[in-house]
Image (cartoon, rainbow, N blue to C red; front, side):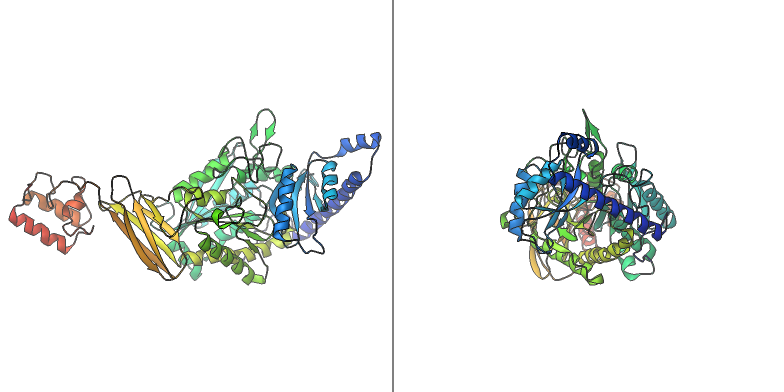
Length: 590
């Protein structure tokens, strides 16, 4: 059974503590140097020395004006200051935003940035360095690098072949495989059941996130057959995990730059790296939370979905049509609202805001129940926009219920903290499995008794903030809506060439099946019981009628309809009686 402890590798914990202490000491020295340079007024010689040693960019932790002794200003005040920073040209990252303490992360390109910040009332709390500590590698060795993720996934697939399917969803610009693993009682086989996804490390430096996703895999595989919940979830759902979306960037974190965030794609003349979580199509472009400048850590790329990693994740979503998807990031200990460009007003909220909000708060409660750690719930986002992110795209374009979880309190916490981070977040994702088994609508649409792709919408909501139509997918004609318990819901199904139909159902706190069969706008012209299409019901039709009743049609199209005298898409005794009557009467075409 998975115990929540990250897989040990490499050096022992004592070595980890020693290395981290070296890192902290280096940071303190670097911070002291940086502050002295910014505050002093250096002469020409000092300026030349400064130019020789200064790094081109620094990631700094900054406290808002008015934040005192860990007490933050109001959300509205922080929203206004973040807008001011954006107007001033600063790159702001919601990862690292601590609303309770009133601190956040930004990129500082020059000492003059500090002067502008301090003049406005901000204070610098910390500076994170980009330099390797030893041997060209700075990241603590217990964290997973791309080769180790690959090795572990291959071993898991070998150890649990009956419930896992390991596959590549794409290849990076440097030739690394982006791995996904499906966990199911019928892996690699399409099933008429909801699918749920977990991913980590869109951003390379957020090294603890892959450990959270690997724990999902460990819990389900190691617990199958012995743990009741793990067994139930594997049997009832398809789980797909992508522990490391950005293996090229992660490799760079281990070898060169521990604070590298983007992928390693290059564009002429000298652009390197795209923020993958600003590259998804929904609201991609200028205006909110991303940059068109390549040197920025939040560079959105030259076009939407330009990156191989983004394309891989989109292809995965097209294959599985996930009911839920959770994207792990760090840091800040909060669960974020998908529509992060919203100003929070009702007109800009997600159409299904109430149920999304319920699940976000359920995740936070599940996390807190483990050991008391509080994850804030930003629903809707109170400040600091993000666009081109995966969670907004999942909901708007795919109809998936998405969650972004910012784990921990730093990009790379001391490895001794990772077991606790993994353990507390298990409470969050276990809640999602539990919630998926409660109030939801399992919609199936057929036409001519065959599953079809059709637009399905909940008339309870107005999908008016850029969402694409929700469409049932083959081979099951299925769609899943998660809904609030103890309500009444109307599902409308439509398809060109067919008459739009609705079904209203009451939902308690368990899944409810909704079956809608669409009638053609122009009824088909055929004779019931005429299985061979010769306009006569006779002895030649008996064998095919029997085959259809056994679920083994072999003749003309629409054979089920030709045998369905009761018009209920089920061939049973009532249809047999109708067929016998037509046979005895020798029915023929008018």
